[in-house]
Image 1 (cartoon, rainbow over the protein chains, first blue to last red):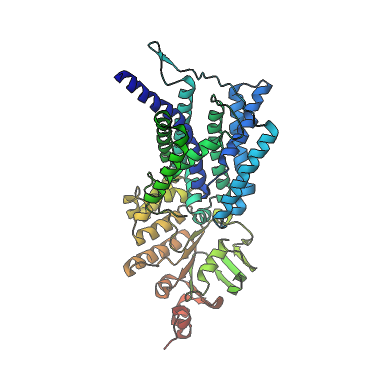
Image 2: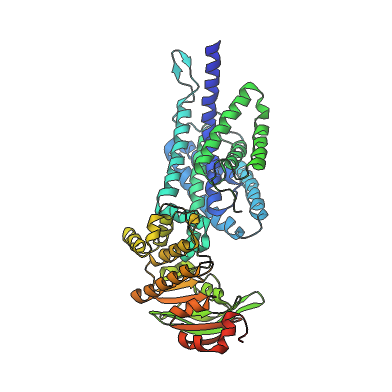
Length: 298
Length: 236
């Protein structure tokens, strides 16, 4: 009985981590765009969904999974950069509500267009990883090759982004463009290009997250990112919107918590609890749990 | 050399600069004096293209800068230390300096070492966030960050703002030394006229957007009738 209990808790933690890293990737994406342009990209989920459809539907024409996933990332890079250039740039220095309205509108448009092109019947792109759990001593564990792939991917993306931002010349310019665009310009930094690049990098991370969602057993559909976007948004807010590591840690914590609610309580309550956590965090510690600054410049 | 000709700048209906013309020669400090709201900061911001003029020309040697982007002007060797110093508080001293070198073909290690020689205190503070520095240290960092790009023109907006007299004196002395050793064109905007005139070769006095005098600094300092304009009070 005791062994069963431990196994159940361990399984929930492992399932939670697996889902949580994807939530963390979505949160990371929001953090990247917030850090580079101080805009909350509400259309991020559908943007990632759209590029994933473009890439993974190539598998219908005989393309392998890896080249198709690469297409997703390249298209994600271009699409996100283009979005910044054409849709977002006119919104800088406007009232804060403007980007929110525009991005929510973009959200709706992208989902509608995706449904028109590809219908809302789910597709099941096959990844070269099994979702059947590993066996240990004759009984299944809570970890599958697919889950391990997801975890490695998320941690890898997080590490790359951290290194890029904190230890490279490019990262220094990206951070300067976000923190003090005018000062950066006076030092010769081509700020506009870097803002576009910030969105493009987020677009690649978003494509990675969406590919991970698409190859899960629930499949790929135009609304596949909606649920996870809400959780990612909550995780980004809890993480403080400024910290890539905070986003991942908050995402994983959310994933574990959601899994326990699903298993021990009622899966219908999961999203409700997520939003309640968001409200409490915003009331008690609006700067997020992982930021050093006491005041956020908005 | 910086040459400004018939420069007009408006913010909506407010005319900030009216037909301003003057020259700041190479290897000399030109002070721009005037009361609050005289247009001193606007003048520097227009030279750096942060503000667009309605009409007029700005020449860096032979090249007209009007219509260029701020980052392009910076890359031509015009360093602008903005009001409030513009150091990035969330960056360490080191990161601020590295950012200064980013657009220029200087060897980073050499450039930083050179600035640490000029401002030894920055070396001690190199791992500290710029926000934790004192006002004087931040001003030194701002100047060092500008100088690391080896500019030919240095635009300084109120370097003495909020500094103790002794610190102001030291900063001004350093600016004088830099100007002479690097043959810099320095444009020094100051409300603290006394400190500025001590080191300046030439001075331009702005009064509500109009340049009312452009003469050698000693003459401006000796002219009592000008004093009310840059001190912001009538002469007695």
